[in-house]
Structures are given as structure tokens and as C-alpha cells.
Length: 616
Image (cartoon, rainbow, N blue to C red):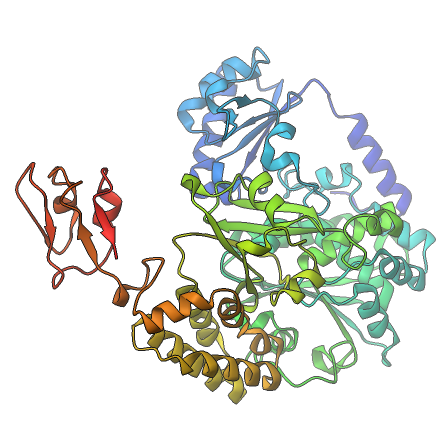
């Protein structure tokens, strides 16, 4: 790989890559990150074998991409230039796809996505509802390029934003452009990115640092992981531009070690960028130098908090410290430090190339641009979604997410993970932006979006998130360490049938103290799931306390399983599946459940085809 010694060299490389590309070549794009768990590697191998056997090696290229987003339909394959989108592809489908599509240019109907309402097959990727209503800015390359091939990134304007700032913009102009764009931190707090850069630049001292926070710890969240895996150079380029703007020569990318594919891809991206002269000393022949080190974290949730992350990089236990001073003034090793998360940095190259007016034209007045969400839970189309700020929760759930499985009723959405809050069905038209979510008692967070249906117990949900937060508390400050434990004990009492009405006031009082007195943002936001469920689902709390009943049929201490003799056919499926042998009855006669033996595992309920088993 020949080192680029000037911006002109970079531009010529891009032109040569584009001009040498054969438009007649068919590209088979296979997700090789998240889809690996569903057999993507076997699908890839089957394609390689079939393409070789059919003599198509000169006409077809397999591109191993990052996440396409549509995780519910894994493994997914897209084929260009036809635009065909294939879902849930198995190795058995490959020969038919090769013969039908690669040889004849026709879609293979068996693997096409089918519309949920009409069952009509949809041929083109852009027409699939999951993709149709998205706007991919940060995810523009994910699922399209080979993330391990730097040339594919350069071919799609990669590092051209860096070239622009190095040749035609001063550091002050870069910061002004980012500030004017309205870009706010995508890690959760939503602070102005441009102002953060300015504070770091203005801080006294010659040595300054850049840190990328890739310690994504929210349950169900995988936005940063997908960008790291599918488009690692966009993060490096964003960090380079930030470093140029504030005057830093060294940076760290802090990524959790549980992301092995992301770690491999970002490490290779750093090596390749160094080899081309896009990282290191005298980048592109200019006076600007910048080096990136990869720091693998051990997975502590608290290390997502910026001062705890800094402590971890320094080799100390990851625990937050009081602020001020903020990292922009005194961060890594006491030097001014700018910290942004993966999605924030990945936005930067586009803003520089297309301008602040373009970016500020997306989204709402106070929440600019797009936002990536990890759509999970009780929803048909789970996966990675990027939409303009300000779209409604209803649009995400029903237009993109395909609604709730089995036609069940939408009940609530949890945004922002353990630090976020629950949005009830009555607020389904709420615009998803920073201010609207804060007003509702939730937060944007890093982008986790968990959907719940009518069978979700909101008290148990609050208990689950508080269990996570309490387990992950670093223990440094009493309000978080002890306060969350007392809240969790109270919630456990309620879900076990030992709750009292005064427990609701206790939860509110504890929540206020924890929010006001905790040392860091993670402790301060820990009560949010409890407060929002109490505010919006107070009737469920009262049912648990006063009636000793769980309306959703989830809390084991408050439910029992019974068999309706008027519906039971005596088929015996429930009896066979019961691990406790708690079900008795003769064949073709109504069965019964012995309450003292039943462990309420729910297996019989799921096995019964006649809906004869009731949860009361």
C-alpha cells in the first residue's frame, strides 16, 4: 500500500478507483457481522463455491459488509446492480439465487421480503418498508462497503472531508462549521459538539487529547458496534477532523472487548490508514500529525461515563470523579480532552463535505440531523434504524418496525436504556428528539429503543432495569450505591406480593434524592425507568399492591396457571412438556394443574394450541 504524500494523491487514488470499476460486475453484498450468528458465513461459502462452479468468477464479486440493519431477517443478502434484497437466506437457497439472479438477472422469489399486510413480495431493497422510510447519513456505508478495505471507503468520498479541512479550513472554521450545523452529542447528554470542541481548544496547555467513547453498554443497544464493524474509517476521519480543530496529536478509541469483530475492524482500519499516510506523522504531506491508540475495555457499564472512561485508559479502576473540572479543561492525564461517541464522530465528515446548512436542514429546530436507534423487543422488524430527528414514535414502530407481533397492543417504549424512561401508548405521537423525550421523563440516550406489548409488566420492567443499574453501580457514591439498592428492594417487594401503598411514595422520594445527589450522570438517571412507570402506569403498581395481582401475568408470585375444562381437549401436549409433572389428566379428557407443583415457567401456556390455559 503506497503512502499518499499529498491531498492530490488522495484525489487521484479516488479517481482511479472509480474509473477502474467495471459497472457490469455484479456485487453480492452479504452481512458478515451480526448475521454471522444466523449462518452468514455458510451462505458466503456456498456463494463462493457456486460462483466458481458456474464459471462466474470474472462477472461476480462477493462483498463481505457490515450490518444492513434488518436483523429480524438475518442472514440478509443484497445484489447490485439489480437492487434485489434477499432475506433469511440459507445455503440451500444459494444455487437457485446464482442460477436465477446472477445468471439471468431475475429475482428469486422465495427469498424476497414479503409485505406484512398483503404478503406481496417486494423485489427492490429501497421499496422494503423497513428501509423505505429511513434516512441513512451515518449508516450510508454500512451494508454497502467491505469495512476491511480502505479503498472502498475512499471511493465513496472517504477522507475527502479531512483533505478539505487540511487544505482550505482553519481550526476555527472547522469548529464554527460543526457548531452551526447544530450537531449534538449522540452519546446521551446531547451537548453541542462544536461548543465542546471550542472549550477544549480554548483550554490552556499545548498537549491535548481526543477520545472516542465506544463503550456501548445499554442492554439491547448496538448502534456504535454496527458503525465500528461496518464503517470504521468514518470514525477515524471524524476523530482526525476533531483533532485538527482542537490541536490534538494523539487520540484513544475506547471499545469494549465484547465487540470482537468491531475490535478487529477498527484495528485494521488504523493500520491501513497509517500505511496510506492518513494517520501518523505529517498526514497527506501537511504539518498535521495524529496517532490513534485502541484501548479495549472490560465491559463495565460505568466506563461509558466519560471521567470513568478516562480513569480506565489511565490504568485505574473505572470510577467517575466530580466535575468540574470537566475533561475539556482537565481530562486524560490532566490535559484538555475532547470526548465524543462513535455516532457523533461518524457524522462529522458528512457535515464538512456537505456543509452545516445541509445538516441543520435535517431534524427539528433544536435537534438537528438524524439519529440511529437499535429497535428491539416486541416488534416485528427488529434491527438498526436511522431516521431524521423529530419523527414520531408511531412512525418508527409501525411504518419502519412493522408493528407488534401477533397483532398485540403496543403498550410502551423504553428509550435510552437503563438511564432512560418509558413512553406510554398515549404518547405514541411524540416526536423523537432531545427536548420532547426529556419533557416526557425519558432521554434520548445512545439510541436503545425497546418496544413492549400488552403482556409486559411495567413494574417488573422497572425492576429489571434497576437490577442492571444496581449491579453496574461503581459504588463510589452513597446515593447511587445504597439508594438504588433500596429502590430495588422496594420493587422486589411489590412484584413478590409484599408491597404497601406507601412504597410508591418511598420510590419517588428515593428517586429524587438519587437524581439530586449522585456523583455522575449514570446515577442521576438511574431512577428514570421507575419514575416514568410510576407516572404512566400507576394502576399497575396499585394492582400489584392492593389486589396482589399482576395484570400482565408476569410476576410469578402474583399469578397462577389454570386449565379451562370447557376448552381443554385432553391432547396431552401440556402434560408432556411440563418439567415438574404438575399436570394430570387422561387422554381426551380435561387436564388440571397442581398449584403446589407448578413453577409457573409458562411452557404449558406456550405449548397449548387451543388456548385452554389461563394465567390469573
